[in-house]
Image (cartoon, rainbow, N blue to C red; front, top):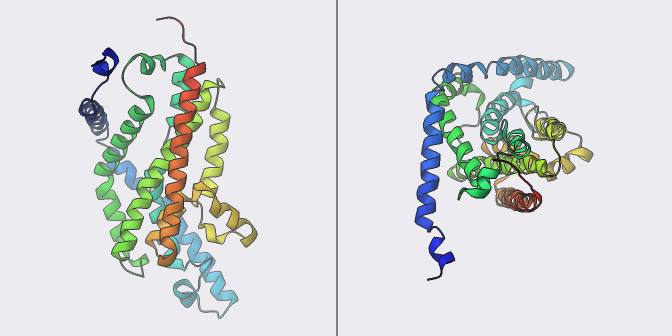
Length: 294
């Protein structure tokens, strides 16, 4: 056996290393999130504003139409969403965004590149992207472990807005898969933005532009079907919808089941694209990176 082959770590050794990293990261996050449950509950308070806002909108539709506001709130639709659907949609986007949001990821990568901390990943047998991915997985596991009770309470109180009942097993499976792929898209997209730090010293302006477009184009503000037809088709082609709109639309049955497989395949395609893009940018960036000092 050659020296290079003997020194190459085995697959089992790599898995043990990744498990230790994941376990330590998870323990760290659970320790300092003792007061996180109350904070999570408070994040649902804007839903109250959304209920009043859309109630007024659907009531005005009823007043302009047949004058029956209650009928309008339960039966009329805007962009394929009735009043209960709209409230349920915002609740589901809260879950989707909790999966796909990556606060501080891109800026943290750029800062490590600029300050030279990236050197430790070049001299140690730990991959930067894999290390950060495991940290984010630990973050999400800790988040939902602590936030499960506040989420359950809010959804129990708002159960009346899910008027179509529990979706089918196929839809539930697609919903969970869309959340997982949305998490990976969000991670590798923002990590790719952070990798721009190999070429530019500051990425905060680019990150601000990304966050601005992402908040609007992901459907976090409102369902994308409310957009004009000549704009909606273009927005639907972008990857941002998988960060918020798509998982919520899947759960609420707004994606026809005969189109679900195709949409899931497109999301998987975007996921693979950003994984490859991130890895390519890291490989290219490392080649041009120069570090000096201890």
